[in-house]
Length: 202
Image (cartoon, rainbow, N blue to C red; front, side):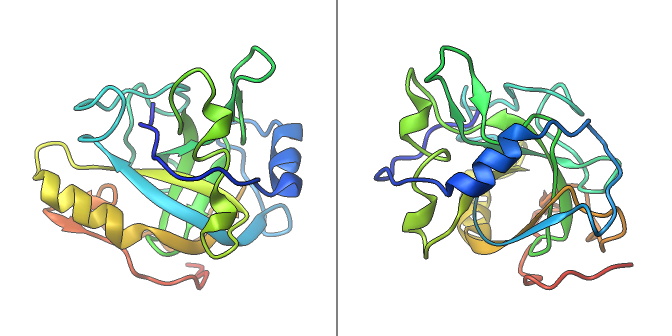
């Protein structure tokens, strides 16, 4: 589970969250371009081996494709991504269902929802469930796993800073977007990002 980040609370875009919670796409569902939803104003952050909960672990709360956080970033092996969640109803409700696939063009990798962002008894009061709009009016907050195990904490922290910002995200994406070489976002001692928001098909 993703460690909670401290930010002031603000309302998350109701439309996107409601639409996502209302649908239950099957894990690894194949989607065509007509089925996907392009969100141009997603606030993207990252978490690592060093600041996960529990710290120094790849544990995740809602495994689908992996038992632990990971993934290469391809359509068939997407990387773990964490989303906001709420316990208001007495049940743990994710902002986007576990198994939802997302493509992030700035890192040119596919992701899959299988972790939550926000700790404690009221995760609905903190990230990633609220606070997105405080970041240049973003409509949704997504927190990608970038790994870092076996590397330095400074590299992981630098990569977190590098990938953080308002970017394009594609929900239920087509399977033919370009995927960057390398296993995960941090690999071979480097942070692979900065491709921009353009969607490039193979």
